[in-house]
Length: 233
Image (cartoon, rainbow, N blue to C red; front, side):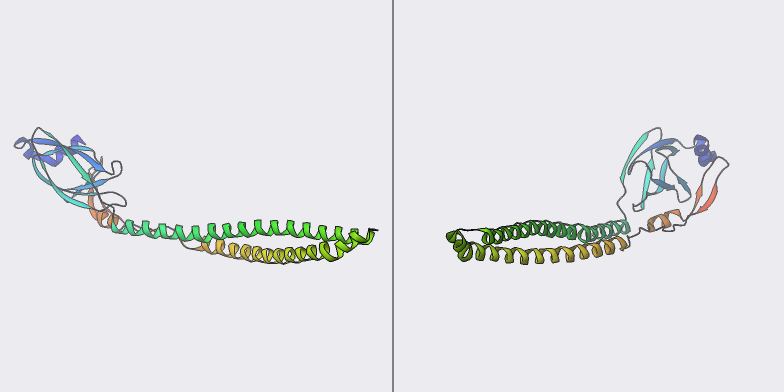
């Protein structure tokens, strides 16, 4: 890095002083910048000739920020900079949140309804079974009883009341069972539909702009590099 910096300064370094820029950038670990429209770099601190230098900062999902920084001789200057999120990333995040919300609605709510109708159907079945057993017990007692008073009470009061309870329990069980089957079928369809909904993809257009055609320094001197972003789903 020092060798490259001195090569950048060239012979004018003897006539000009140098200073240091220390970058404190949000995000702090994966940003890049282009220096003076030529050199693409990833540094947290660098020494440059005194005077103004142009910088273009960028990080994944963030917007490019162009700025001019003045290097002061024999001084270290802290550069505080926050890169805003790009409009494309904000739109992607909103679309992703909407899709996840729709998936939640398509999966969770029908499942809750199915669970509720299933519990209702189970309770209705228990009530139907109890009512049937009670009616069967009344009929057995009516056929086996030798007491005229008991037979009369069963005939006039108990049997009609328990027959009505049995009819209501049977109707409730039929309704709740039908609703459970229908809601289970709808839940299955809704979950399949939600799982097949395509997820949004993010295309970092700012990266395409930033990659451009820039000089990337390396140990052998440097290379010209062209960047291309291809979304992978």
